[in-house]
Length: 497
Image (cartoon, rainbow, N blue to C red; front, side):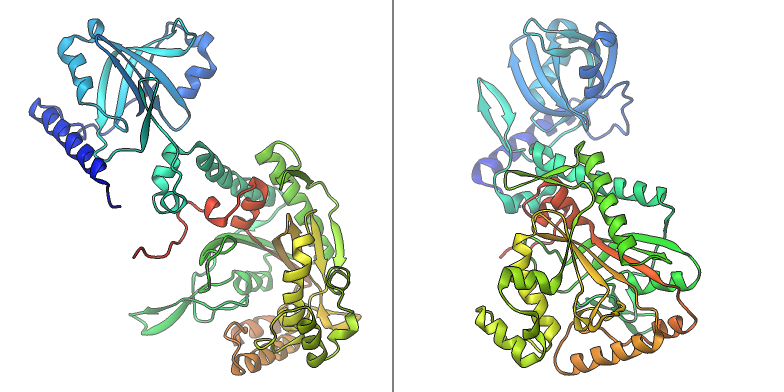
């Protein structure tokens, strides 16, 4: 990261202080560990028990006020920040003089007694200290009331590119990212309690199946074979269902070679689960309970915030057929999807381009995205998706043009995708062949033909319900984040310059 002229000057001054310390025989990077008795939050939350007791704490200097023979600082550890008080009379003039060689961002370990100042602030009266690390680059700070202190980074791109700085100085960003971890933890606890087994499946795959997406391709030198980074977890997890593991899930990274926006990152965390002898309605009930459970654990209540209003995650969620919702919100009648020509005409009437649309199913999903999704604020299951866009789901028994599939929506975001899984090997083979025809016609995201998966189905797979949830999207919705980049520690960024 390029430094301003002022920042360069600060780096030079910090390096001069580092050199001065070393000339005094003090190496601020020598210490390998520091034994702490308490965290800052422990002392703040249990002052009555710890008053006058000796404690050992460590953290980064985030505020500093030198006043001649006495100095106040704030140290921040992973739990909170706390004030420390240092006096020349306690430390000795020579030792106290070292404080002039410290800067914001340096790490200190201190030992002393807990007390309250005259203003009531809980503080540690330092009797000895150890320099644990020196920061050579300045953390962003300003001045207020004569005290150096940090202020939050305002440059959004810099926050994403230098996430470590963002975590240091922006309390809100830090809390969102920590809560994103809690979302994943709560999901695991829920599924483990439900009797699902967590497994791992290959990231490098000969075929990138299970979703409509372009894969990243890499080369295995020893085998002299190209592999795809997985775009989905689905087909290997279903193989485990064939292998008689009846309730299985994985939370893992997937990779899709596509555009980036506030809802998409080229690598993200996906949950997929499969349950033998379960249907679409069973998975709906599971999704309702999962989101309710996670919301309670992370937020402490069954509500999320969206545009200033509370959205209740309590089951049951609303349900609506896809074509009915398109008719309601877009004014397109179900019979207009009878042929590709009539579907294109309806799409054109609604002002959407049709030159890249080659299937009725693709047009239906474009109308969903444009006209229906922006209205799905309350938790809603949208059911009965077209067969062209659902090559791994069972056909709908009343209308084979559609499938037993739903997507879950909350706060206008798609948060879940589920099927009553296709387990007929002959039907699956026909679907793959249809997808290959779409690929030959120019659809780069059409599903590849996975012969081994069809072979697995020929050995027999029980009726199965399956589910996919993007954990980043789930965290966005539950935490009220504006962008997927806010809930990913290190989001992908365009190269600078």
